[in-house]
Length: 222
Image (cartoon, rainbow, N blue to C red; front, side, top):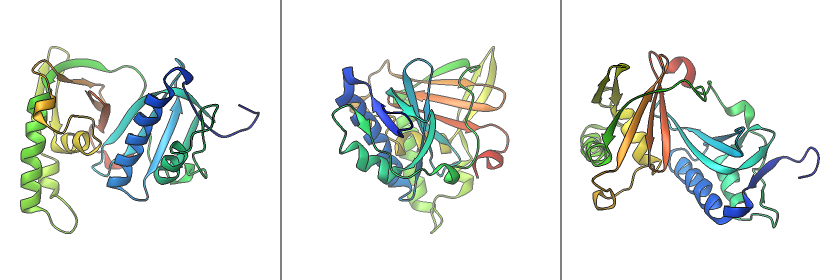
């Protein structure tokens, strides 16, 4: 990396896998928003986190092995995908023009989440399929009704606290491909992990994580 050079450098030990992971994330983001913006932030452990605002008032993230310069940058999803399709020999990915001004809202904290419980992944996938059927029946030109999106479809209670998981999070998980698309691909022991802080709900699935602001998400996501 030369001084001042902007971009993403994928881990050389697993470059093909990391390129596929990040490309899949960008592709899913583009399906939801053709003008979507992906935010990339460096972590202190040699990993970077890709973020996308899904349009469900839910943030999606996926961790990839690599580094980015600057340590926090925003790129158009289509430009990032184009860069991932032409990775340089040294692993450099050109993310295109800076899109930092297009990102709205804050990100959840890196730490402080308390594990509340695990939910069977098959149950979440079943909820997603039933929710999609209802959405097709009741959607308008503006998408699924807010009453369906805001409905808590899973209640999680533990000594550490209680939260409801709204359909928004379930839709975001499946739309970003964070859960396998077929029940046959989900093992009986596969779970979706639910964590929370007083301000954020976090749901971890096999291929990524979604975050939902508790309280009024519109304050930070719009």
